[in-house]
Image (cartoon, rainbow over all chains, first blue to last red; front, side):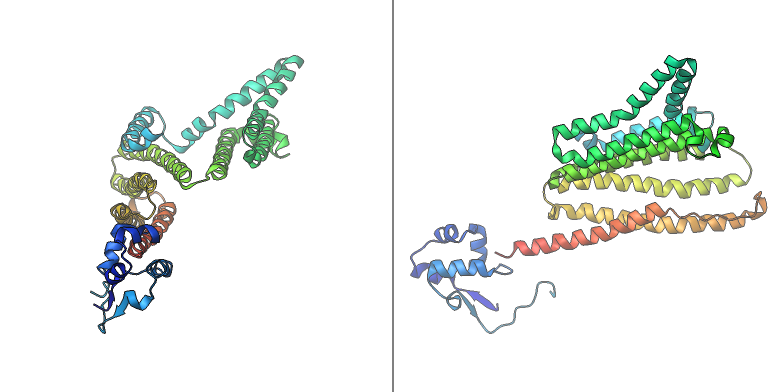
Length: 76
Length: 313
């Protein structure tokens, strides 16, 4: 897969729901769902900054590299 | 205006039918006859002023008052517009300039020496042309002032798009009327010699790009209606693809048809009265179609980039 998103773990640690995080960060629940399942094309630094601030964690706690190379959609 | 845009096909069909009926009822559809009709309003005003000024001294004064009134109307209108909205200052200046130009034109038509000392001796031969040129100058000035007004007041995208739609609609109407004239010239039996085929080919090479251009304008009007909602929406892609296809077709036909026409003239050269082959490329259609092709590519790229950006949170 390439980059894995571990948002669920951080939400459990902070005892926060996805909806609460959406309201704090300012993104829609649909986009949050896409982020949790790793289906987004990219994430802005501003959004990442807000998520890390409200979950009191670092970027590495949310995003991890699993050693694989993800092919671009265009190349496929 | 909304209904005009929504039913643009019907409106243009009506204009086409009217122009067919009008031009087929005219005894002469040559360019010189149309010049006379276009210049007629100017001729009417000039004749009234001249006859009034030649009656008596009082008539002369009345003629002057009428002339100043006619020429001063644009300035008065410009002043009223300026009072309504101070952004119309440029409009006011343009309308004052227009008034001065009108005064120059009409005074020049009444006293030919005013335009050029040589005119007084030979102008009677060129009166119809002078009236036509004056009409065209007046219409052209009005169009320029109207475009400036649109640019001053197009504060947001919606207003600009609406203005663009209106300009496209007027262009389509004018082209449709011109197409009616071309069709009448094609179907009126001018001669039954072998050269008839050549004249059919010549007219056909004008009519086909003109017709495609009108269809393109209709598609552009419908496209600008969609742009009111979102400039970079995926829903615009089918329309853009259609405009791109049509633009390519016009470019190809605009280049190929005149060349075919040239070969045909070469084939009929023994029947022609004078040995000259004319190849006329419709440059306006070519330039517009090329430009639209380029703009379509840019917009398609923009929409694809916008869609990709939507997947960034």
